[in-house]
Length: 299
Image 1 (cartoon, rainbow, N blue to C red):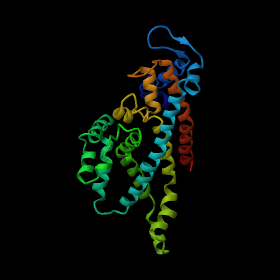
Image 2: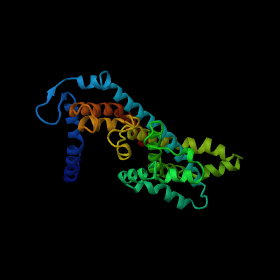
Image 3: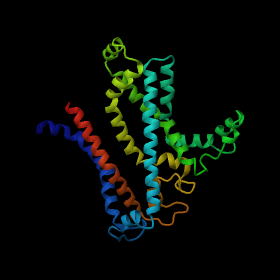
Image 4: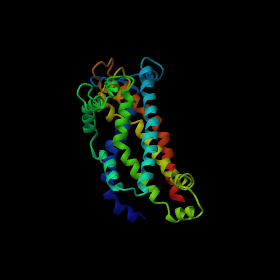
């Protein structure tokens, strides 16, 4: 065993070093920095738990909880429209409908586009003056529905969620499709011989056998939902407007730690406190995911 480990050591050390430098060290330093007040220049001032008090109970708590509930809303809506709708689309593709391969490719294509480019494309499409979305609505007689989608506080967050679904749903479709196609065909043949309807097959065979896939995707989606930053930043910028209606914990962290137009305070220590709180929210679900994977491997 020791001989094998020594042989593997030269291959492990580079990867472990990079992981320590880019993941472990930044996290430990962020945790350490969260107990200080520091603008990034000059000496750090030790404040203990004051940063956490400011975020949870103090002057920053309205912004923190506003962003937190937006993350929760993101998770709920993405669970419905990415995992749920992805499952329905995967069901249709599993029936080998005409053109299913082309549709499968088209659905997955947005996943290969960078998020910055996605933000640019949709900013153009959603432009209230000359964007294709509003122009199309006007052309088909639905001009009353045209609006500044990203400039209206009542529609901005849902618009970003819709763009996020467009960007990522292909991944969920492919994962759910793989899970459905992995079900033994003998089960379907036996069910049809017993007179089962398509709905009964979905409810009593396909859905129960894909529950583990649902569980995995929902856990991963929860983790991703609390790490959302790029799509909001690409479409609304660091201020997550209008009136913080699209603010999430990621943009709150960026704005607090590194500043931005309109930010009342720039404090790396306060920003580090936000990152630690995000970690404390995500880590229990991450542990749950690891345990789920371990249980499946033991079966």
